[in-house]
Amino acid sequence: MARNESRERGDRDRSPRDREESELIEKLVGINRVAKVVKGGRRFGFAALVVVGDGKGRVGVGSGKAREVPEAIRKATDQAKRTMIRVPLREGRTLHHDVHGHFGAGRVVLRAAPGGTGIIAGGPMRAILEALGVQDVVTKSVGTSNPHNMIKATFEALGQVVSPRSVAARRGRRVSDILGRRDGSDAATAVKE
Image (tube, rainbow, N blue to C red; front, side, top):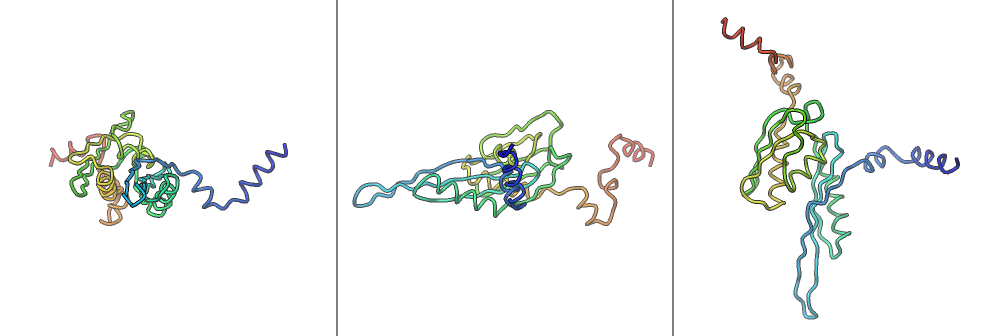
């Protein structure tokens, strides 16, 4: 009984920011080891690439370098938390529309998919989409398989995703005008005119 009370008290004492950080999904994309040759032999360093997301439409990426792996991962995670972006999702499970992104030689295509498709993506793109909270998406990476370039290209593509609500607000129209009718009656009226 006392243990439960202390756990509840501990949850109350934590700030909302601490609670939010504990709910974040962290994915380690890759670790790179580099060796610097010095007079006494080799000195090793490590570079880590980490993706962080809340599973509800926010995601960030960070890279960190250090002499030990845990320190490099910690630095990368801190940077990823600082650089999080918000991406609008349709029904909380997929993208609103198809997007293309590129960075250097990395080119990616992200396509919205119907329910039940799952995440069809590989490597770094899968880590980003899982951390973002996307459940149905089809992706393709063309060009380099370098994780840094693939991640930057994916983030550029995700930055292009806009919700119908924001497009409607920008154009001064209703959301239904932007989306059109889904039942095909728009096509019927277009034929009559």
